Image 1 (cartoon, rainbow, N blue to C red):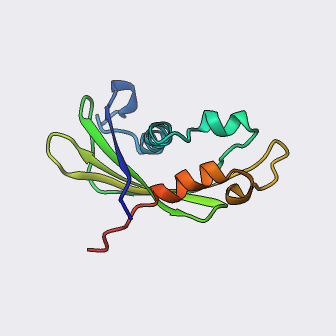
Image 2: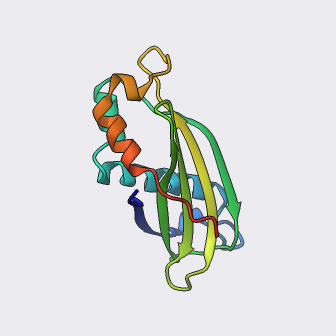
Length: 145
């Protein structure tokens, strides 16, 4: 299976830092969403396409493991990949690195489901075989080393 990852780069904005000049921890979750959205759009199955069919994909859980601080104007590269897809749930993994130093700043995961307009779970593999095929093809092999 071919590994499908996407690299998203962004600069830390001044307003994202706290009184100590360090990026506030809540911003990393926002960056995960930015990277995830760019990833899905890049591979042709963005949120807007799902929403055209009346499907939303809420977050079920988020996990962040902070490794190193970032500060104003640091460039952060976010490596995003699909870790797991069951046809009902989708799990992304994120590795954030300081672009200049290469140091890992955060490791994260987010888990999502699919719901229709009435907030009833959607089994993508049954209702949307085209999206299902794309998402299956995006599952990354995880290097356990």
